[in-house]
Amino acid sequence: MARLFGFSVEDNEKKSQSIVSPVPENNQDGSDYYIQSGFYGSYVDIEGVYRNEFDLIKRYREMALHPEVDGAIEDIVNEAIVSDLYDSPVEVELSNLNASDKLKKIIREEFKNIKEILDFDRKAHEIFRNWYVDGKLCYLKVIDQKRPQDGIQDLRYIDSLKIKYIRKEKKKDRNDYINVRRNNDEDPSTLNPQIDEYFMYTPAPAYPSNLATGGGGSKGIKIAKDAITYCTSGLIDRNRGSVLSYLHKAIKGLNQLRMIEDSLVIYRLSRAPERRIFYIDVGNLPKIKAEQYLKEVMYRYRNKLVYNAQTGEVRDDRKFMSMMEDFWLPRREGGRGTEITTLPGGQNLGELSDIEYFQKKLYRALAVPESRIASDGGFNLGRSSEILRDELKFAKFVGRLRKRFAQMFNDMLKTQLILKNIITPEDWESIREHIQYDFLYDNQFAELKESELMNERLGTLATIEPYIGKYYSNDYVRRKVLRQTDSEIIEIDEQIEQEIKDGIIPDPSAVDPITGEPLEGEMGMMGDVPTEPDIDGGITDAQVQKDTKSAEI
Image (cartoon, rainbow, N blue to C red; front, side):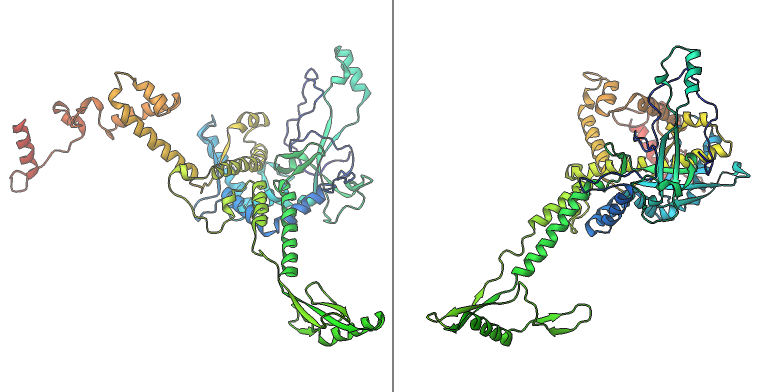
């Protein structure tokens, strides 16, 4: 294979031959397939769904233009990406990272640089929408080849139609087997499979013409794996080895909704108008003469006006006959002569239950609450029991989307830190799981739920407080009623002790447990401010009240 374009940030040290496995390491998108050759894999389209990922992405983008699907996508994107005037949509969270403050500061600065290169604060909505619709997102990490220690210089978006992730098994070399067999007695079939992983980029956006031959990749540019930030949806078609979008589940629902809407329009246009039936008396005329006479009468009295929506013209068109026109029927001698009757229009044309059913089905396929279809639905700020369960499920779904999308930041941050020699690849493997990303949150459903749970717990605590020390212990109440964990109990106790020491809250031992008043001998410990006499040497009102109270006691 020719030299790849790009760079690599992986450790050059190879694993020991003693570590062997017939199963290779998983690839970035979670699929287990290999691509032996070619650019886009192709096969016979038996089900009529898609032939390759090229067709699949184009279908997703066409679906996103449909009003119902576009509305659902906007609901999801608006929940995931919250644009605020002062705050960034996402920040790096390092509270769980066991590292020095200096390293944390450097990581925050580098993450800020990555967001500035992406212009994420301004384009966050567009970037997340492209990832959600296509099911994948690709960025080329541009660096200075002469000075790679300067880090990433630019991040350039690559259309998903122009790039393909390739995993190809290398040809086995018999000498490798011989060398291993001489060193140990293991079966050569258990050796680590050698996999080439790279990206194939085709600048031309045209549809590949030679898919069947598998030679579409010959005209592309091979790019190293580490030079591309590749973030997928995580949905994999295991049978076909394709990355799917979250819109894939809605393909059938959208097609059904389109067909039912079109059939409804045709039905209402054909059944809405009232039509007339003309019975024309043709007497004893022969068949040919009767037909000719009927056509003459029909042409004489029929008037078909056609409206051209493009030009705004109204013209008389007598050449064609449609379903909405009148009916002309001949009647022989002995009948009732010429007669005109009227056919009534269709009934129950206002029924929309079938349309509403398929709309709800489409929203369910997109994991969006059905209540959001109605435009008059308001936001409920009442009890958590009044909040729909679908909204809570939707909030969890958006949270999963955010975690999957944040893998893009992880890959960019990894490359930036390693190129600048801040950390090593081994260090990154140890800290990667502790780097989290805090997205700006705008959905108050979860907050309302937590607030009401806290109110219920405090109410229960007030009820059983007289029984603490008799039937319940403090530790039991904190664990079972307030639902505090061990770490929370330790943290709260330390905070209370520190606040007592700083004088923020009074010492419980210096306060009367019944009245809540400070004890007499501990007045100086409560932080009371001594009163000062008046300028003329008199006694203040506060002193008089204090002396009176002491005398009463």
